[in-house]
Amino acid sequence: MDWSAWILSLKLAAATTLLLLPLAVLISRPLLTMRTSRRLVAEGLIAMPLVLPPTVLGFYLLVAFGQHSALGQLYHGLTGRSLVFSFDGLLAASLIFNLPFAVQPVQRALEAIPREVREAAWCCGLTRWQTLLKIELPLAWPGLLTAIVLTFAHTLGEFGVVLMIGGNIPDETRTVSIAIYDHVQGFEDKAAGVLSAVLVAFSFASIVLIQFFTHRIGKREQ
Amino acid sequence: MSAPGLEVTLRQRAPIPLDAELECAPGELLALVGPSGSGKSTLLRCIAGLHTAADGAIRCNGETWFDAAAAINHPVQARRIGFVFQNYALFPHLTALENVAAALGGLTFAERTARAHELLTRVHLDGLAQRKPAALSGGQQQRVAVARALARDPAVLLLDEPFSAVDQVTRRKLQQELARLRAHLNIPMLLVTHDLDEARMLADRMVILHKGNTLQSGPPEQVLTQPDNAAIARLVGLQNLFEGTLVSEGDDLKLAWLGHRLAVTRIAGAGGDRVAWVIPPEGVLLHRRERPSRGEAENPVAGTVQDCLRLGPFTQIRLLPEGGGEPLAFSVPTHVAERNEIAPGAMARVTLLASSIHLMPWEPPAETRAD
Image 1 (cartoon, chains in turn green, red):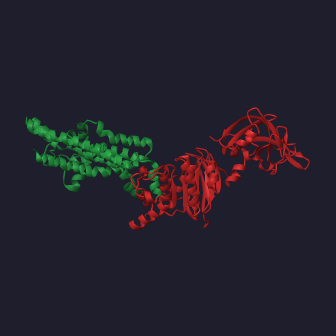
Image 2 (cartoon, chains in turn cyan, purple):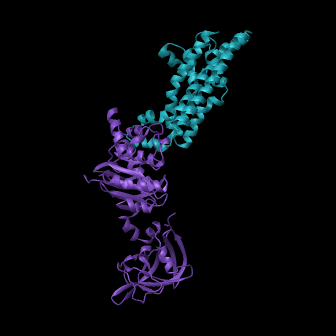
Image 3 (cartoon, chains in turn yellow, brown):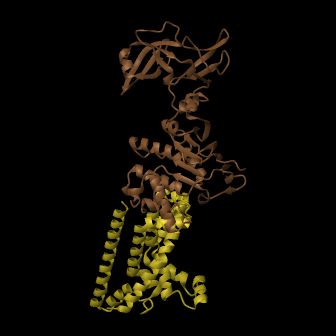
C-alpha cells in the first residue's frame, strides 16, 4: 500500500472539506435573497467545475497560480512558497473545483427552509447570525452532511486538476489517484488495483452514509 | 410623542399598493379585514419590520420604529413584537419548550426553561413541552406559536390569520382561548382575517382594507351594519344592498324604493338625493300568514318567495318584492317558515324595520367587489 499517497489524499480531502464547508454556507446564504438574474450568473460560475474538463480548469489555475502571475507572486511574497506543484496550490485548486459539490447541497437545504421560519426567528429577537447558527444550519444539516461527504470523496478521487496543478511529487502532490496512474504507467497492476479497490469502497461507503443519515434525520424531524 | 399604543401611517406603490392609516390602543384588538391581496398581511409585515414601505411612520408607545422621512428603520429584532404567522412557522427541529425558549434571549438557561414552561401552561400545553411541532395537532401548534409570540413580553401582538389552518371545531376553541387570553394583555393587538364573523367575535374595532387603503374603521357592529358607502357594503359582503331616492313627504323624508315609501330613522341626505341603502337580514321580519299586516305595520313589503333554503334550525328566504328588483334576503326559524307555508312561489309579506335601514351616498358600482 502506498501510505504516503493515502496520507496526502486524506490530508487534502480533510483540509478542503474543513475550509470549504463554512465558505459554502457564506456563499449560499446571500444567494437566497439575491435578484434572480444575478443569482443565475453566480450559480453558473459556481457550477463551472462540473462541466469544464479538469484539464481546462487545471490549465487556467496553472496560469493563475504560476510564478509569473500576480497571485503566484503575491503568495510567494507572503509565504515564500509556490502555488504550483505544491500542497498549498493543490489545496487552493481543490477548494475551487469542489465548489459546486459543497455549495449546491447547502444552497438547496437552505432554500428548503420556509421564509416564515427565518422571519419567525428574527421576530423572536434572534440576530441573523443567531438565526443561521440556531435555526438554519440545524435544519440544513442533511445538506451540510451531503456537502461534507461529496467534497471529501470527490477530493480523494480528483485526478485531472491535481495532475495539472500539482504534478507528481511524492509527499507533496502525489495523491492516491495520481499514484494509481503512476502504477498503471509502470505496469504495477496489482498496486493500482489495491488503491482503486479501496477508493471504490470508500466512495460507495460515503454515498451510503449520506443516504443513511439523510433518511434518519428526515425521520427524526417528522 | 408619548402616546401609548400603536400608530401606523404607510404609503407605497409597489409591490402591493398601500395607503393606510391606523392606530391601536393598549389592550385593544383591532381586526384588519379585507379580501385577498388587499394588503392586510403586508401591513402587518411592515409593522414587524419584515417589509419596508416607501413612505410613512410606525410608532409604538411613543417610540419611533420606522420613519421614512427621518430615515429611521429599526430592524425586526429591535421592535418588541410578537408575531403569530399564518402557518405558525414553528422551528421544526426544536421541541415546543425550545420553540418558546428561543424567544427568551438574555435569560439564563434555567430562567428560560421556567418561563417557557409558564407560557406553555398559559396556553394549556404544559404536558406537551417535549414534543416537536410535527407531533402536535394544528391547534396545539397554534398555541405554541402564541406562547412563543408572548415570550418576548411584546409591545404589540401581530396575528396573521392565526385560525385559518385549523378545522372549524378547533377554530372556535382557539378563538375562545384568544378572547380569554387577550383580557390579560394590555398591549395593542392586530388580527389579520378575512372572516367577518371572527372579526365581529374577537375585535374591539375593525378596519376595512381594500387595495391597500384603509376604508373605514369602527366597532365591528357599526362597520358591518352602517358601512360608509356601498363599496364597503359590497366588500364586507352585506346582503340586501339596494338603491333608492329620498323624497319629502310632509315634514318627513322617506325612502322611495320600487313604489314603496319606506320610513327611515337615520336620515343621511336631502330630498331628491339618490342613495344606496342596506338592511341586515335581521331587520327583515316575516308577517304571520293568518294575521297579515293591515297597513299599520312598519314599512310593509309584499313579494313572492324566490327560494327558501333550510339550514338546520334556520331557513334562508329570498323574497322578490312586488315591483321587481333584487330579492330581499332574510332568515327565520325553520318552524316559523313551515307554519307560514313558505315555499318557492308563495306570497309573503315582510316588515323592513326603519331603524335597521342604513342610507349611504349613492355611487356607481365600482370595481370594488370582494373576491
